[in-house]
Image (cartoon, rainbow, N blue to C red; front, side, top):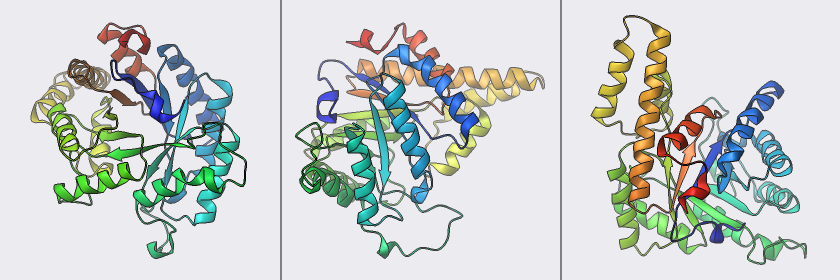
Length: 315
């Protein structure tokens, strides 16, 4: 289903994000978790794309397998970094020929330990340029049309806590509006832990004339070490003091029993994410995008605690 048709004004969608496994064993483990999540009937799933296209082949393999072996709609990520126009065109052509209808367009980050690279050699420096290219792809496709006459649906990223590379919050919304004006059909936000950040972001989008669906990115914390890695990788992620206190109680409240502490941290994280989802639904969010970390348990627990069998129950 085209991204323009995925989001209903009267009820929220729920979607999941996965990242490509590094080897065949990881692939089979991931597919076991995906199979566990299929009964939850997500509106779609997305698949990440490594820095500088580092997981290009793995991303495509996972996207095609999900398309081939599950009933799930799949939205692959695509980034600008380290790519020529010909390479982007080739990727889009492969997706089009395999029935992929939507792309999540991102600027992307160079790999941390990768070789030095002149970004001026990239065909597209910013996500808005990639959005324009993807939206024009059907016109360039040599007569082999994408199934939907509108071409690819395009999803872009939003940053409720602010883009880490754009400290000017006014310009940040201007840049987002440019992506929308270039043809984006929906926005999925970076993860956040305080819903007030999302509601403020949503209101600022409205003030800027952005009317496409804004989907809230939610990630359940499953370990204290994972939370620290998240803080390093996500840049400006803000952890509310009340969440930090709860995690600290879980870590230190079990008399040195590490297994019990890990389980407690996970329960704190799932509870926090569930409350985020409940509050977002109560405040008419258009959709919730759950960052699964390639595991199914936390996501299934969130559904159970919300009291719903699957995403259809939210209609």
